[in-house]
Amino acid sequence: MNRGSTNFLRAVVFLIGLTVFLLCIFALPSIASEGSESNYAPFLYAVIIGMYIAAIPFFIALYQALRLLSFIDKNYAFSSSSVEALRNVKFCAVAISIVYMVVLPFFYIIGERDDAPGVILIGMVFIFASLVIAVFTAVLQKLLKNAIDIKAENDLTV
Image 1: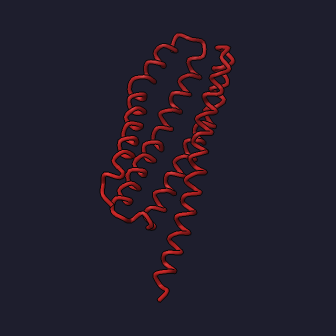
Image 2: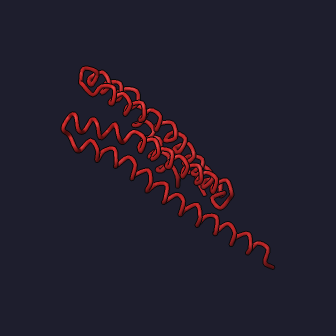
Image 3: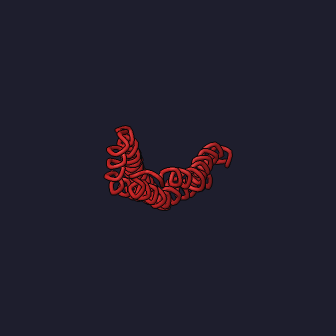
């Protein structure tokens, strides 16, 4: 398979990573400095620290996605390395969900003090989006594992 078939997906992964990186560099410090004068600053700092912590497994998952795309380019899509990359993406998505579940009470406190219930929904979106990704990658991992087993069984058949 030629490399051109995954170039679009590589560009999308790169743009997503660049966007989150720029948010971590510029937007989160700006939010922290603007919120430092408010009465809920310690809770805002906890949320921002949680976002930085969640960025670590996010970038690991993006790297695993790039690895998976390189396996596809090399015609190793049906390999144990692909299953392991999907497993790593699943664990990263679960880790992101756990981080935001820990941070969700701080979203609630900020929403209560600022009288903005939408803040709580934003926190829940992070949790559920990463859980959907975790479930989707778990299903793909299982399907890929079954396909590899069938392929190995067929290779042994004469």
